Image (cartoon, rainbow, N blue to C red; front, side, top):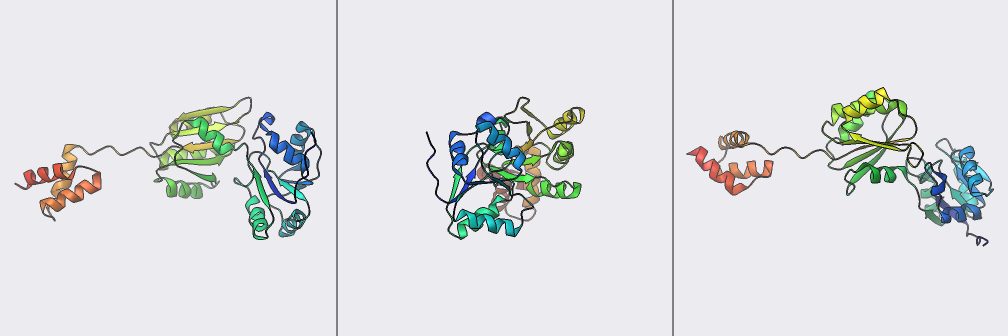
Length: 278
């Protein structure tokens, strides 16, 4: 059946992250009907178009695209349907397409998103880490200090952390995680949807040792689960905290301070404070 014509505007099209069989029927229809495809690399997108059996004009649009190139695309969107794709996955996820979308919306140009594959979501479903709350932070910095600063900034966040990483830098990132956020469960998901797909979990130190011995290839998603809940204080620790508080406060207030600091029962702490005071 012939694809109906599309209205002028911007069409954000998610493409496969590895397995070309993951391209959606709707993505094929939109790419077939668009008059121009803006892409990171025409060679990569050309392989996808060949796979689905269509030919369309392509133009490079990536991190290095100039303001002039963006203005030209925006002008064309007013006249023709333009698709935006990345080399793999959903556009705008860790790539510069948001500037194009923001400007298109500001000018009243229709913007439509065609959902599909995303490496970070695929990795989250495989890793077995909590997904009720997570933060995606793109690629970790390549320099040791900047990488450490980024991880230190995020170390206390009570949620799963998701990063993109490269094979040559993976071990350094895992070693930094082991040093800065010990105790978190870590997962490495790589070659997603491809023949050699792998998702390996463990401590950051264990995974650093593994990938030192087995240097990884391919696209990588690095995940770290939420920090472990602290162990509840023992009786000796509770007494020490109460004595410290009793040196400054009456028993009721001392019990309240320790209860709030450690999530303990205030009434029980008050009874113990009275014993210690007596």
